[in-house]
Image 1 (cartoon, helix red, strand yellow):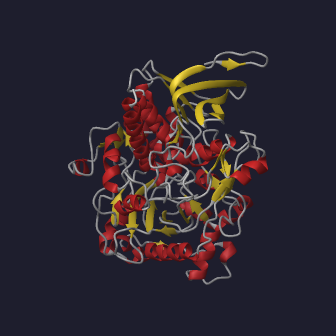
Image 2 (cartoon, one colour):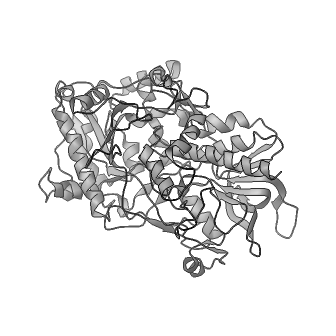
Image 3 (cartoon, one colour):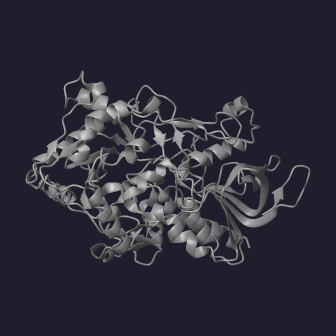
Length: 576
């Protein structure tokens, strides 16, 4: 590392590749590129290293309240997050080696064939489902025996363990059983069909979280050609304005020491859907008028920061049961037993990934096999898991009607809008790299998004009529949300009001460095993930996603990084 002190000059250290961001994609990419022993790779991460406490699945939400989370908040809006503090949504993004794969709820879903075929139809050659499936498989080590036998859709050769969490509640079993009783199939949602119900496939190993850091970076750090620098904020991509070639980065080590590093081959942004577009704009790549407004010299005029998409839900759809079939966290002696069980056997309630246990994918308006709604089943409620409420940002006065659920047998279903029509954007607030960007979610501005979410809520409620739920006396929790009392409980107007007040994001922000063909004026990167008009600069993370898939974005992030690694290796080996 070369540190540039005031009044001194020193020659920056050189590497073949510089990867900005040691998150979900960046850790995998660093592993793959450093497999080539003659290439030197520098990985720069702003956060600290991952610790073993962060790998306890059930307390995932706790670490969203720590410096391991960037702590982003959206700007106020009149359409959503109205019941959250200051009317702003909290967006959780990992600031730690492993990125958001250290903070997320470990759900592993790839998305639907039609999602990726849609990318290809839009001009992203090489990104159809049959093109990307091998890259999903490359990283996967499927440890669920019944699924591992399906060699077309699963692999047991990768580094990322996929398994069932060791523990689940009885009410989760009831939820999965309710699916076929309601006319759906029991499915492997990462195989041929996605419509149906299933227990969770999770990125876990032996009852612990398996992050990108644990799966890919840690095994690679013994290589002499891989250098990892954390607690370092990249402040600028170094670009020659004459030939528009990226040749390195400027960063601050420990927030103090100004440092530079030179890339002989490429600079690769894997900083995520917020930080990657922010860094591009700080470096002069972005919307011309906006950059001029904040005083950044323009190098390349591109639609950076637009096309922002996310998956959202209603966060207060609660149910009660008449027996002890849910997960309770109000019993201190019982919690102590759970802790001992986890410490000595890696089993019990602490192995529940943020209390999520099962999923369902629903085709709401047609039967084309592409789900519009996902139901996330949690065997408890935010009343029992206050860190979730605080990480979400809910107002305490709205929490009051749900306090009693902490001492009841209660659970939650989150209907997720999988293919939103609404699009948001982000911009720089100023040209200071330490200033957080302005985030405009623009949720629920398209009427169709509200309509589909309301239908999803109703589908979830219909499950209480199944035999599986009725044997435990499951009922909808009907205490009304205070700001929505003027609407009849259960009416479409009531549910729309609830969605707009208690908007729950599952933190799948993406699309802000859109991938597309030359004919797409909104595209920031091409199908090789190269930034348009700039040589030796790529973006490799979920910001390149053109249209959000019906997936939790950890799996697509790994796929994108795997495919990018292949493209990079093929290009530079061919040029050698």
